[in-house]
Image 1 (cartoon, rainbow, N blue to C red):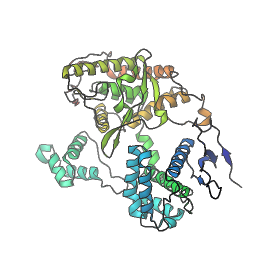
Image 2 (image 1 turned 30 degrees about the vertical axis):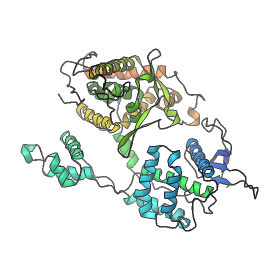
Image 3 (image 1 turned 135 degrees about the vertical axis):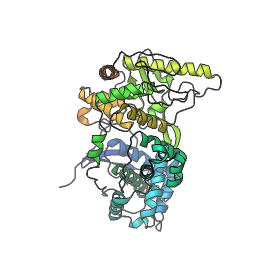
Image 4 (image 1 turned 120 degrees about the vertical axis):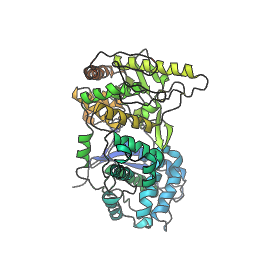
Length: 496
């Protein structure tokens, strides 16, 4: 039976802008594209680029734009020579696309190419890298593709073996660093985790399916660009398949679940931390870590109680860098409930007071994720502090990003409009049956904000065991009750 091909209208493409020469359409329930280039002045023929298949129309559209830009930029020059290997082709492609993608995306591509593609299939002639080769490549990555050493397990085993030293305090951080070949900073963080009861588990030998999908996505774009430059080769990525990894998703889903009671108990401790305003935002809006790290006071509309999410801070090769968001949908306006709005205003007042006391040397005025001297907080620091608060609260251990999942789950339980929820958390796409409006629902999430914020606040009052009160004073910025854990000048949280 022939496959069904449906050309997508602008609405079906999620409102993507129309670009001459680009056609995005459905094929066998997934999305692909066709790019038509300018006519050849000699032959009169119009070259075209047939794209691979993608899960969403947005992915197909972005790949089509990149393919068209690269084809036009190279002006007909061949990206590939007949004798080129896979490594040579991918290397040339990375050079060609470097200035047209975000630094974080480029860094991920380059890392994946050097760590996985070049060592395993980089030596093969590009012409011979067919679907059979790619399927074998993905299978190898799935089974035993992990190349990074499991330093956390190595440190934990050393610490467990010597934990009776120094009257039960265990080995020093320096001893662990020297024995395991890690930095002193990694060893210190590890000791803190182990003393709080975090047990290191052996990582699987294979790469996660998501990591393999990222590598596959990069190779899809490589083949599209190569074919677009007139190189006669089949698109090996179109029919390549990524192996399934039974049990992983189910296990992760169980671990990444918080009830509203868990969320409230964590928040009761998080309110005593220096960055309490950011934690409340995370709990009541589901913002991404990069969005919390890049939040700016100027984006807060106090009159309408709306926070505009624009700037973000991401980690590229270990360094924090400014970015403009994960997707276009990431630029959004979030309504704040009364509880969240009051907390964030008091948090900003605290930052203003710190800036006033510090004086002329204060850095980054207006940013919300800063130390008392105004220096920006590294996004990874937010993750470490979150993990500390999770341990202190005694709730199930999840990732910081999973608080976002818990927020969405709570919203679904409360029966909120799914289209408005997708706009609020910055999701780029939703299913056709959930598409209620064709425009972004700016301001329409007020009822959603009040409903979820109210549910969290009621659970928080019960978890705290007393009426909430806000105090701005040295050492305690948001106090639930007498005897709250103190906060030092650098914002370190100590267990009571």
